[in-house]
Image (cartoon, rainbow, N blue to C red; front, side, top):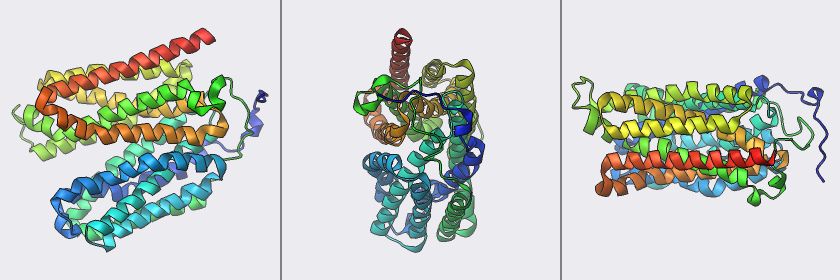
Length: 409
């Protein structure tokens, strides 16, 4: 039987604030090469030495390989010290960007993207595991939200800086700068990040489900993973992949003087900034209200309204809908990490985070091809209405599980 002693405050020797800065900085800076590649590769195929038809494969293969790497990464984090895995992952990320800078051609670039997939599994699974190490059920919403803020800032700044530097210095020089930036993040983590695996004894948390010792039977984890997969399918998959079409079809004819590419970039940046705000706010609210599932349900409800407004098609409705979709995406993405900590035992958090991120990667990977396959049949408006329906499915799952948990209590 699991020991249910209460963990005293003296048993936790590391404050989350001490962990958040090196962890968040390393995560944010690691995105420099990846963000730059997404921004400039479609227009700099000659410098990269690949054909335009290969761009989709190069940009997507890292996400595909993570479907097979997230699980082993989570298992490794459950078995070994966090620093031993997280810090090398940052340097592998820097190595992947060195490959972008130093080589030309499809196969070397493919190797670089596979290295980045390996690195990001270690970084993203490890970062969430470390945050759960140093937080409790009373404060993990706030700190997971703040960690997500570092991620969103890194994603936004890497795409912006990557595009500007490429126009100024060129493709190769920008990639070398990206490698240096990611290396700096690795050095920061190596120097400042404490080991967190043994911060507190492995004791039972009253909020953890009884069946957490059998991870596959943990219904709470599968609900969380499903909600995350649906959220990523809509926000990081469909909406991100169709934003340019939405601008071209619905907003460019509304009398706006900005070009399609510029307006698309403005909307993408605006979405990211809203997510930066929504993630910590939702996490903090879930701590204060003591209702993580309730706040997640509100986020999903906002997503339903947002996608319905986007489907409506009026310019102001689209802007409002994209904004609400960003709030939903950021808040749900922050809460699912905290919810994972709530529903699994401490000894299984790495594996559980691996399951969570595999669901998210699967959703974001199949979102774009699904959207473009469906558009000839149901048009863009129908795709967005389908996304509203998927948010509704997530809301139903969250509310049903919340009700079931309350009945057991």
